Length: 90
Image (tube, rainbow, N blue to C red; front, side):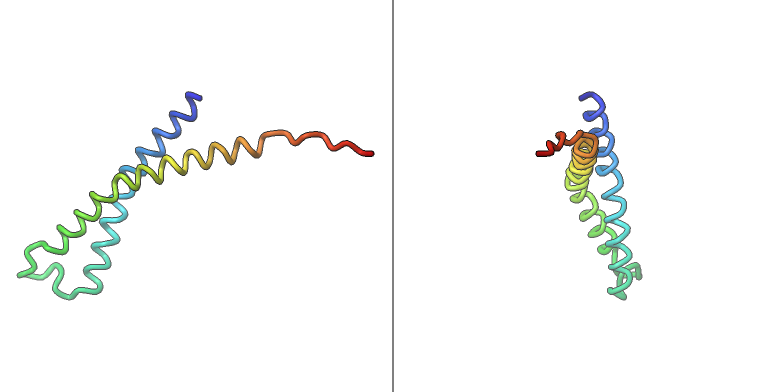
């Protein structure tokens, strides 16, 4: 049980940190690709602030994804190691 809690905390924190970074970089890449005014003088950082806002808002969903992934791995490994009942031949 302690191992499961440790894995939940580890994957949850990993999701909490990695998801906002990936989302922010993806939003910045898409904004600079599709909006020619992003990053130019006169933009005053609007694209960058939008990317950071979306990244910050993705932190809690990232935590939930990490916890769900840890639980999925735990129950999948538990199901794979559970022996099947013996088959009775008539």
